[in-house]
Length: 275
Ligand code: AMP
Ligand code: MN
Ligand code: MN
Ligand code: MN
Image 1 (cartoon, protein in one colour):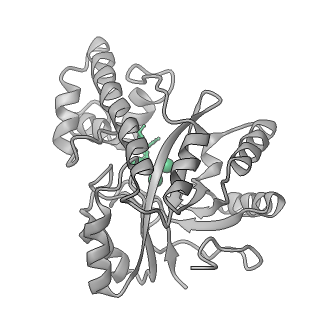
Image 2: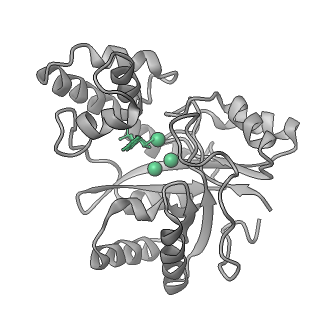
């Protein structure tokens, strides 16, 4: 079964419109696809309609930005109800924070000698309510501040660099409860990306489980093959179900294409087991 439960469209910081993303997934042989845009659900209805016409089974998803212990982590919600008022108002509160953060990023970059970056970022954002660092990065790369999006991040947009702005996203408990309130299952996105020391990783996962989290991504475009093994072990240890998702954003901006990752280890319970 080819399952891809993590992807982005122009409703957040992906490069493809929802229907084009679905078409690409179908062409790649994906049988079950989740669209998981950052902090919003506005791409889901278009994606679902296209999935129905392509014969792809579609899963409503979202990727929620969370602050835990001073770090940013991402929690994916799968099988959510995009109409649920609790989920919708929670996501809206995050997007309001994003707008303020984008203004601060623009000011911080201006202070570092990079002018007009917020206006530039907006030209790359199809959804004006969802300005991501990716949109700043595309603008800065295009205007020659660094050679590509990745190196814009390295030189301008990560902690310690001039365009980085501290921001408080949702709490872990709130994010998980919004997902559950809407009937969804909460999954830790790309746990290997957080560089938590082991005790902190364990504290994070224990709290996630205590507040109702049920899964972790094991096979993701963000993990190395060694990390597939490491997080499979952690899934077993914590009793989490396991997810597989490319985190595809578009050509040139993603390590893995839609549906192109290895399968989960056989003994793990896949998050889609009971769907
Ligand atoms: P934001 O939620 O606005 O802080 O933006 C986070 C997004 O930026 C992630 O979802 C990735 O798509 C992208 N991103 C984060 N770090 C990097 C990086 N080092 N290189 C390229 N893209 C990145
Ligand atoms: Mn992204
Ligand atoms: Mn993420
Ligand atoms: Mn993602």
